[in-house]
Image (cartoon, rainbow, N blue to C red; front, side, top):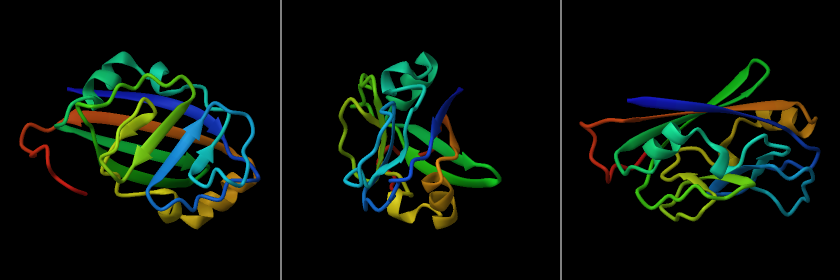
Length: 150
């Protein structure tokens, strides 16, 4: 079983993408330089707005979560995993985490990409305010253990 969703947001002049353990998109329209994990603003969805089928899949410890960050011709693919602890109930934010920490904003855990490792060419375009498309796809792989690390 697979499910997916697409999120549309924008870059911002203050995108720094320097955070060592997360990256985030938010429905907020503005961004201060303190938000060093945020890569997209004016998101058309928060965690609570994701496709219900996708929400159900990523709230499973066995889920593989693939996210594509697309800006023009540039694309970054992030591999992570779901968690049975996810509530996905935050109305404004979506956060991808390297750690296993979960809260209402968390979309996935164990991410192999964080803000500071995102392709700097993509970050430069985001700083120009260009549009960012975030495609999230999840599936349950019955053959992978739930304690895998990427």
